[in-house]
Image (cartoon, rainbow, N blue to C red; front, side, top):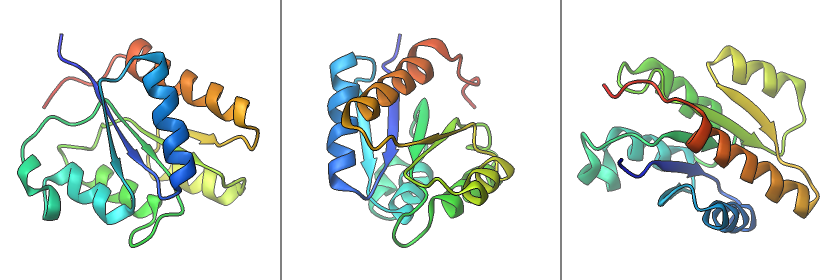
Length: 146
């Protein structure tokens, strides 16, 4: 069975390090690729720009996507993902510190599979990320490869 990967789109270095550490600890994803802004995420998923070498490469099992990103917001990334036939059904989890109802509503309206608020407590944050990893990499059945 091929190793399943995750694309983490996160501009906060501390959150990135914690998420990577937790995902490594639960040993579910052999590969966690990181994009640090919305444009990098789009380039990664579509094999463009600095990720042109990925053109036609397998998509990740899931995308963990922050909303408040430089260059393109998470919601703009989500809109592009849902607009393209190759990525239309790619699981996208909004993982954000936003507690705004409008962000949650807009995320779901735009096609997010899940909306998860980052807990402020370190231990709760780690547990939330671990649960996400277990669900999206071990429990969830991904859509068929296209």
